[in-house]
Structure formats: C-alpha cells, structure tokens
Image (cartoon, rainbow, N blue to C red; front, top):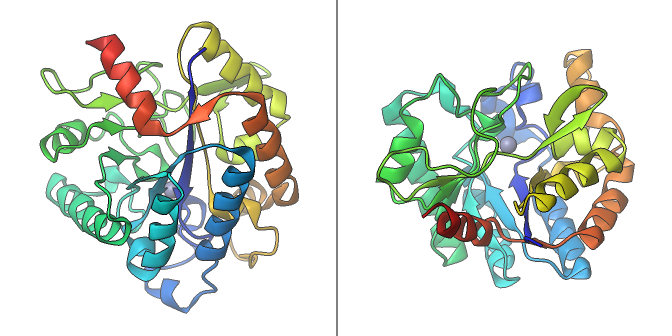
Length: 280
Ligand SMILES: [Zn+2]
C-alpha cells in the first residue's frame, strides 16, 4: 500500500486567496498574526499521530518566524516553498516568478538549515496560463511541484491536466504531483482544505482509498488557520468567502486526527521520489 502525502500550506488567516480583494498586503503587518501558534498546534498533532509531513511555507512567514521553521525541520518534517507572499503564479511575469521563488527559498533554507526542493503554487495557480512555470522550477533545481488542481473550480484549476504524477518538462527530472481529486454528489473537489473541513470525512477517505487501490499515493493538504476557531472574523468579505473560510473550524482538528490514523502518511518529497522511480 503506498504511503500518502500529508501537506500543510503555511500561511496566516489574512493571506488566503478568499480575502485577497478585502485585505491589502500593505496591511498584513498590522494584523493579529496567528500562524506561529497554529503551526505549532499542527506540529503537535503530527507528533501525536506519529507522522511526518511537508510544510509548504511562505517566505513571508519564514522571514518573521525563523524559529518556527527550525522547529518544523527539527521535528523531522520537510520544509518546502509556497512562494513569498501568496501571489498566484498566473498574476506574475516569468521573471517575477523566478524572483519570488528565490526570495522564498533563501528565507526557508536560512531558517531551516535544510535544502528546499519542493514547491506548491499559492491556490494551485499553475495552469494553462503559466506554460513557463514548470520550466522555471526545473531550471531552479526543484525536484517536485504539487501545484496543479486537475478540476474546474471558480478560483483555480487546470481541468485537463493529468490526474497522477507526471513530468511536466520534457527531458527534465522535475515531477508534478497534482492534488488528489475527491467526488461528492457528482461534483469533483480537491482532497483537502475547505472541502475536507466542510464535507463528511468519507468524501476524502474514499478518494484516498481509490488512489491507493490503484497503487498511487493520495496528495492531501490543509492550512494552519483551519485549526483555529478563535481567529478574527473578516466581516466585509464576500459571503461565499466567509462561508468557505469559517465553516466547521472547530471540527477540523478531530477530523484530521482520524484521517491521519486511518491511512499511511508521509512527506511529499518521499512520495515524489517514489513516483519519479516509477516514471523512469
Ligand atoms: Zn496557500
């Protein structure tokens, strides 16, 4: 049975795509930063479950909380990149994408003392609009990316991308690990984040079992702010964004504990290495 990929996208409650048009980056420094405490809760959760995982972390977070990044690495988890400040890749020029990657990597490597070889685009924003993005990741020496959501969704999606691991750049070792897709009531959603939080756990566990039955690892993700019911509420955000962001926060930690106990989980770099060997 393959070991599945457990991943956390480390960003604070005010940095999410859902509030992008409500909260300006210029105001971030004045807000109630909760990412450090919430990420420590996630580290404790994983220690209780006896699992290692990958923390795709913003350079912005590493710059402010280097000791947190060190704790992630010292607990045996993988520190990987989620870009600098959550700008979606399709909003950047190729040159700005390269600069964003470099700044994030320096901050993460300095803080963790480990090499960063994995990347997840903010809001799965590598799609048909960014045909240059994987080539830049390959040139910069990343061994894998987990940046593609092969579905239709109002905020993201590259719906006809492969559903399993693939080599996105001919002749390069870079592996793309698309996020696993779950099915509910005839709809397809990503296995993780708000969908995992709001829908019955069975939707996700069925997706994990389906992947594993095909000898494939599931790729699952969530965010530290999702285990924080006490986070400040953004009252002027669109209703849809508020429903997605605040629903069932109090249930999340228990659901995660049961999901972790129910399947085999590990770091994304280990899954990428296994998939690379299979594709070779
Ligand atoms: Zn993110």
